[in-house]
Length: 328
Ligand code: SF4
Image (cartoon, rainbow, N blue to C red):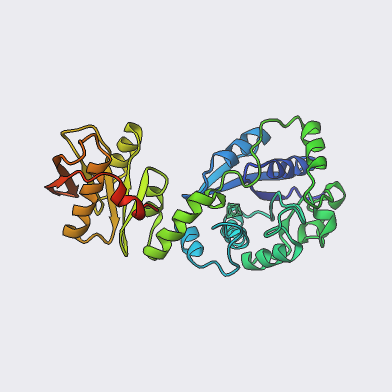
């Protein structure tokens, strides 16, 4: 009797990864989903895909290793800061470790030949396969018939005849399959990756240029508030609403300087990077005062704390205009 194989799917949560599971569920296989997350994209869509298809799905944090790759991706960036080829290679490499630990036979993805200009060209697929160290064990069920048979197809663990031959950028066949499988309410491909958003990508680029040693915590600051450059390696995040201020205060790490104007409604500021205590904290205090309800020209005391240390700085509100050139 044919052995029941075990496959591990990389679930992005997009329609194609859901369809890849559905196509494989036409065969007697044991399937497990994994969905990676970083500060740039979360696990929710992949976990939802797992629920929709009924396969157990695990979220795996690859933030630190992803950020190191993002600083210098060997295959470059896409339109913005999205290093798609190296991202796929990294995910498959991480998944290869899970495959070994789980004793699974193959990995599978929802990739479709020729669908994305950067990462889903045949050549790029071969590159990422090589990067993963799993040549012959990565199955793309939606395009398998257009690709060389994988080891699991040759061994008969997966029936090649039941796989598909989708290619190109058209979505017609995917939509037909979605209707056939009764799949509705799926996210658009790539829509969840913040590195593909122009404004955020620009901020990430600046952050990495200013702070080459930036960690995932530094990236988190870019998601909230306004951002100012205060020096060669020092940045200030200023909350834009009560909820952002609360979030910023709660997220502060022991090395970050937290600033606020207790006497007036106004923002919370977080100074991070290589802050030179006097110069940068003073400048940050002036910016926090400028974005508070303190009247133009009025003097006010800004409070700061960094871990167990704290202090007060008297500043005059000179308005927002002088700081506009420092906005990221
Ligand atoms: S869009 Fe983002 S998550 Fe998707 S492959 Fe590219 S870098 Fe990775």
